[in-house]
Length: 262
Length: 255
Image (tube, rainbow over all chains, first blue to last red; front, side):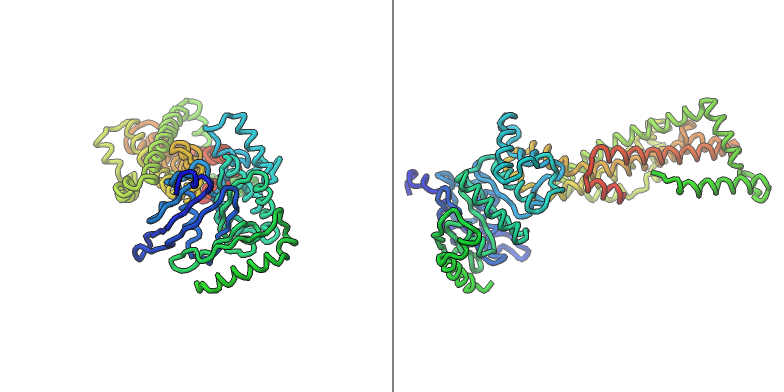
């Protein structure tokens, strides 16, 4: 593939495999994974627990080196965390610095890189994007789970990444908070056009947010299905989920996951 | 701090002690009445002896605790963050820190001779262990997730140390400081008893040899007050240094 073609994709994953050392010797976690992600696309990866979703996301984020295959971001191979990719983790409790205020948490990735004045305006903008205006002086401990996760998303947005990788970002939240944050994320996407790849075990979340849903299944895990959702944007928690197209995709994904006896 | 109700028991105890001794119910050759102890305390203060002894002991305790904080902190940090250092040093640390520091007193006395320098070495030696162990443990248990965060935000090594590791370790280090202060006081007083005529420990031993129990009790009481004040001061310093940190409250409360 030529360089010109490569720049048309955000991510290009080819024949990716990961072996990790476990207590009983090396174990193949995922194998033979190939897919592309287009710039500005939202891709959801679903799969059962333990199928290797987090492993795959860590490889995309440069936090884990693959054992075989290649990962390209734009036209550059990923070796270590790339400059314009940020990972958002599920456990906001551990991922935020409890001794820093919200705004200083959000500024973490900018310190020493961006002049003070610009830093301030970027932090303010990031907090605005996640709906936390005016909460900058509070400490994470005093925030609810949903608010804390917004802080983590804001911290990622502040560095203005081209790709946002999210590891079960709303997995620890209650249903209503989850729905709110899904819409916050879609708003952010509409405003920033950031490419988003996220993993989830919630099928409905995957369909609702994504342009395309990938099913990771088997042991070792591999991608067994890739379904474009074809749903119109902006999306709506009620109307979108009642569309025939939504139900059709849901049906197909369920069948793909049911076939995977984990 | 100390509640008013908490003062009742010691006051009642002292009152009873005074009554029992002055009515002759309690008859021991070397048990003074609280009033005698008070008189001794006043006399010692007036002559300036107590102030000099107190200054001597306190200077060594504070210096030893500060050295222990620096030494234990640095060693603990190295052991916690560098696996090769941990592999090579941890067995030695676990052995050395279990030797009662007072058991090394005769060794130090012969090696370095009597004097404040030897007191300082011994007190620092004993006080560094809780700081070291606390720090090493805290460095090793910085959540793995925070290391992920540092990587995905591409923080440099020094930036990560400064913004993530140091603040995460600080509460445990300071909790170690409190224990270090108390241990430094204990070891210093014992060392003074054995090797020097100076300090609170020296005063205690001299009073004992002079068969002056009231004076001896006055020194013992002063040691108690120094310990209480030292503990309260360090606790306060930790609280002011780390406002609202739950980690701080948990760990400080536990030690």
